[in-house]
Amino acid sequence: MSAATENDIRRFFADLNLDSVGPNLFIGHVERVPFRLETVVNEQTIGLLFQTPFSASKKEVPEFPVVREGTLLHQLIAEKKAELSTGNDIVWFNLFAAHELIDDGVLMQTLNEFAAVLKEYFDFDNQVCFACKAATAKQPVFHSEKLHMICDGCFERLNQKAVALTSIDPANVIVATLWAFVAALAGGAIWAIGWLLFDKIFAGRKFFILLIMLAFIAMAIAVAWPISLVFKKIPRRGIRLAKFMTIATCVLTAIVGEILFSAFVTTRYVGTWNPRILWAVWKLVMIESGNLYLLGKIICLFSLCAFALDWSKPKTNLEEEIWGQVRQ
Ligand SMILES: [Zn+2]
Image (cartoon, rainbow, N blue to C red; front, side, top):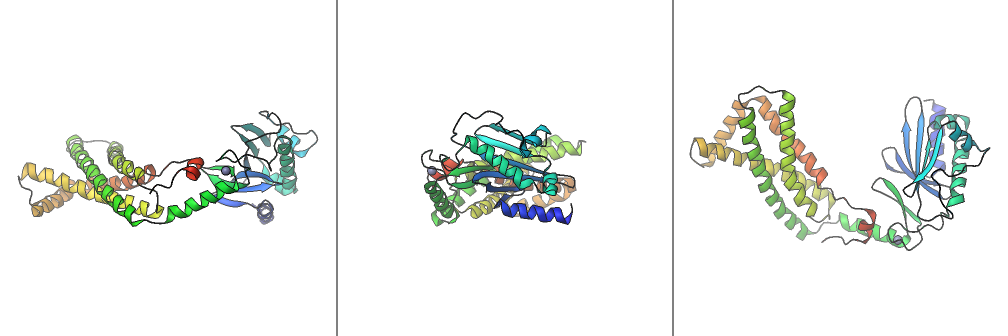
């Protein structure tokens, strides 16, 4: 891409007051029409994908809003370089060859025409709040990959909640720690059973490496399940702490699992529960079983952390976030 083009893109971004909300994702507005913008940039082309949510319309909204003939936008749609459609309370507007418009200096003109078409159908000064469905929506917020328009009151509540969520309550930490131990015990038992099964199935036989790797991942999934179940229920205060505790619980689970596993082997073949013998047996199993086995335990632990972190993420929608209680 030429330096001139890069400068043009920068100017265009400044003109639209874009706020970055993620990789290649922005929110902004043109002539009071709000939008979420996703950019697709490669060596050959620049694609701009806009989404504008709406809650109330002045007249019936067709699947393809009418674009006046003779406008540049009309021509671009005819040439299949642009697409304008509606569905699910969102206007979808795609510019597939935005680099050409930037080169010709007509990108802003196109966007102004887009805004003009939308204003035929919607009054963007008079949209209903997405969260309370009552007050006039004035504030754009980005949530669950989408742009939502909410009222000043809901916006304030959302910000207060955000502050509350980052603070840490010591009572919560104690409760979370206790639950972490419960999760580690349950997960550890599954871990131990998993590795005993693994020995039964795979030891002494030849298998494809891929199959063995899948077995490691399957084991991680089985162990991550009780952990994520527990952490999903735990209050969401102190997001960073919750992440740290989830990982700590996974490590603890692996340690508990290894102790239970060695205990089973020791009780069965040596007939004692002596910690020193347990430790010796564990080291012996590790050395005797070879690199693949050791690698398996590491893979298992890492996938366990990844699954537990992902699954324990609370999945809420914006209304819940604003109107639901911050759980204590
Ligand atoms: Zn509201």
